[in-house]
Length: 336
Image (cartoon, rainbow, N blue to C red; front, side, top):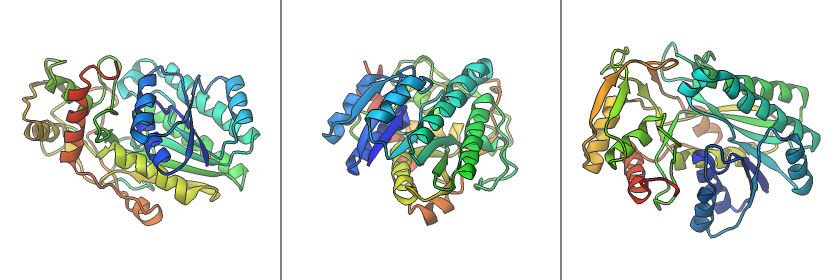
């Protein structure tokens, strides 16, 4: 199949491109490189030994989308493009709604015009907000607590309404939790611009000497050690989940919703301790105030994905850390 991957140069998108190419799919990447680098796609090609088409541009560019869908016989779309930092979204919410919601609307319009009926959407566990209980199921209440999560929720609703209006459309919403790790080659990984907003890349940059210490935002949550608890999933497992969703749900009409996670919660302090144990590196840290929009704990039930997609996470926390450290040591400054 010819697969359009929006945001394909990003952290999750690039790893998914590897899995798609390895599965024999033809890949067309659309990325504006606002939060990614073209070098990531060069490394995807080196890893797989296969070529793909790369188009630089924005999903809000209706004319560009028209050209892409007219010139390429697109069978399905994997939609990763969008801004993704919770803290940043609280400071600049309008930009998040413009990029994420407006961009997705432009994409859906182009798909509808050209009769492309299969979409895999990169959603997020943030749509659940502060859960009443854990693990979180797909049927749990949806109540995002920050603008980033709200944009994901709005896009989900748009997709659901599109499906309701067209009985031939197949949309899969993948609500995944906290992706970490890197490709085992050490050549493909997470390369955040500026100060990392996620825990694992920040710890890795402290370990490699790029940053002096880690700030832990809050130690007074209602968790066993007071720090936030999250479900960390290896990015390769996550990428393989997208391929499984494409295989199982391609052209199967309806709106399909799946959590992708490990089902295990890990606190910030547990992650710091385990990172030091696996890598042998000391991780100095200090406690800071809570960040707006953060919640106490969040981890998944992925039983539906196991049953319906024949997918489950395979890589343990130790491998997530080891692969992150391998990437960080080989690429202390990311894709330079």
